[in-house]
Amino acid sequence: MPHSRMPPFVTIAAYAPTGVGILGAGIVSEVFDERGAGLPRFDFALCTDRPGQVRTDAGLPITVEHGLERLATADLVIALPWADFRTPPATAVLDALAGAHERGALVAGHCVGAFALAAAGLLDGRRATTHWRFAELLARRHPDVTVEAEALYIDEGQIVTGAGAAAGFDLSLHLLRREYGAATANTIARDLVLPSHRDGGQAQYLAAPVPEDCQDERLAEVLAWAREHLHEPLPVTELARRALMSRRSFARRFTAATGTTPHAWLVGLRLSSAEELLETTDLPVEEIARRVGYGSAAVLREQFVRRRGVPPRSYRRAFTRAP
Image (spheres, rainbow, N blue to C red):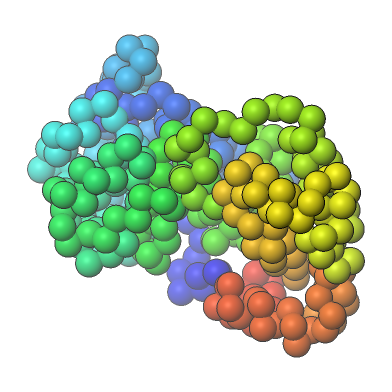
């Protein structure tokens, strides 16, 4: 959903303590990197307790030029994961995180970075997620937090938390989609060769991966075909027929591979496509509804309000910018 109460974030500070996850630091650095004309220009920086050489969880040092003062001015503050997350950060760090929240900054916790937000009291009375392996520990240590271990990210307005490891991409792209719109998030995701949105939750990653056999290749081909024919009804029976499977086998295979049902995947795809058309074209809502596979603007409106909380025309106004 668009958040129109405040301007989108521009300055970003990612807190990187000793033992910071090198993957997490790399993800946010890459997502919010400068990309040229037509895309937002972010003022991004890593910060730490004492500027200088900071050891990562991989043992490799990185140079961090900024101290905690950077947290006092950033529009978006991100607590990155770190190796010693079971020990709460120093009081100065907790005060800086709480201070950022008090002055209205957007505060996010990636992976076990959620433990820092919880220690600062920012998650009390809220839903939150973290890496599935440590969700039980977070819930046990902070009983006032509702921990949802299956989620890839949870948006509680001014506080957003994300799951472990590569789910930092999901968290970061969600923040871009929320504040700058689907078109911007999709463009940056394409540049990173990533899906702009993953359906399902962490549960799909707990078991062994689905084998790369011929059925998976057929499934990938069917999903690509569905994206190209979004204006059509696309019943599950047709998708299953193209995958050379029974409907039941297709549904089971689909859920194992994506973590969601064919119907939920299609609805998400249709709404994401509708978002991008609303942001980037002047097409009437009726035409957008037709292009994304809904029989009428009324049906699109019903789905849009249910999933996004606002009708299509309000969504379009929220992301209309003066030239």
